Length: 164
Image (cartoon, rainbow, N blue to C red):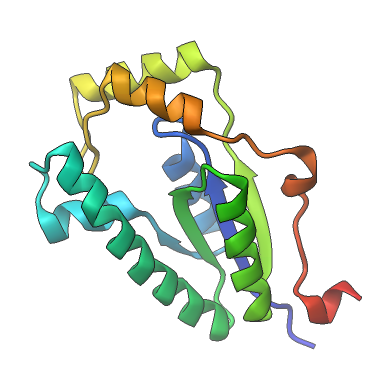
């Protein structure tokens, strides 16, 4: 019997190191890596206002999910480097993976608040390609919105056909 593919969900705030982890998984799993910032700048430009950037993210993530779903159907591992800030969003994508007969693995990149802001300040000073400026006010708002995963969420899940 063929091993089902895995959907990797990368969880954490901007600057935590999700994309670095995604690149490592891309090579080691191996897996198709889907990172919204890699698509937003080429599609929409890199001089977007925060409102424009926020408006672009949902359609890009929707297309990336469609690509990931097709990859999973073909037996290819996929990585969604979306951040997954809420438990409900994480659960929704785990259910989507299970419905396709895929495993899911939540990878949480936890970073202390002061360290995370220091990383963002350094990144803001010399923005790498396909990244966007994050203000302190945005960071504060996002920190308050973020729901860190609880222990039970960090367990890899098998699709229903294998979980029995």
